[in-house]
Length: 203
Image (cartoon, rainbow, N blue to C red; front, side, top):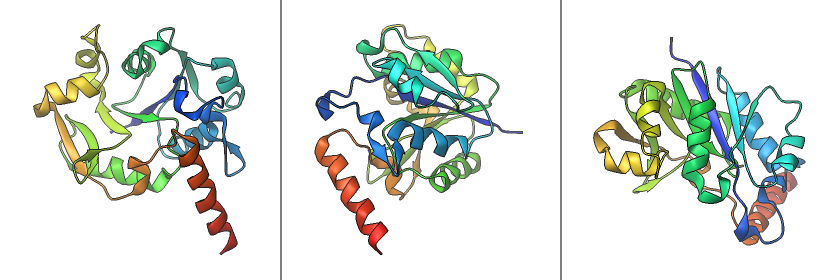
C-alpha cells in the first residue's frame, strides 16, 4: 500500500522579508510554519520531517508539541538543495515523499490530497511536479526508490537539477490550485495575504 511522508523546508534565511523571519509571521493566528506543518500532518500518513537551519531554535520552539521530526541542516547557507538532501537522508518508512516549502500558507489539505491522487493515477515510479502554464510548483512527490539517485550528486543534491537533467524520471501534473504556486517571500506578499484574509473574515 502506498504511504506518504513529507519533508518541509524551513531552513532559509528569509532575506527578502527584511528583519523578520517569514516563517514566524502570523497566519490565521499562528506562525506560518506551524500553519503549513499542520496542513501536512492532516494529510499524510507517514513521517513529517521539518528541516531547520537559520534561527532553528525559534522555528523548533513553535513546533515543539507536534508529532514531527526535526532535521538540522548545518549547510543551510549553501542553499535549498542541501536542505532537501538533509531531509531525504532523514525521512523514513514511506513509499512516497512530499517535498514542500514552509512558506506556502495558501496550500490546503485538499490541495495536497489532490496532488497525491494525481500522482497515484499517473506513473508512481516518477517524480510528480505540479505544473500550471509551464510554471513548476511545490510540493513535489518523490518515490522513495529514487532517493538514492537524488542524493548521488554531492555538489548539486536534491530535486531541481535532477528532474531537469532526467526528464524521463519526472512528470508534470496539471494543477490549478493557487496553493502550489504561491509563497510569501516579501513584505508586499505578506501584506497582500493579510488583506485577502481580512476580506474573507468580513464576508
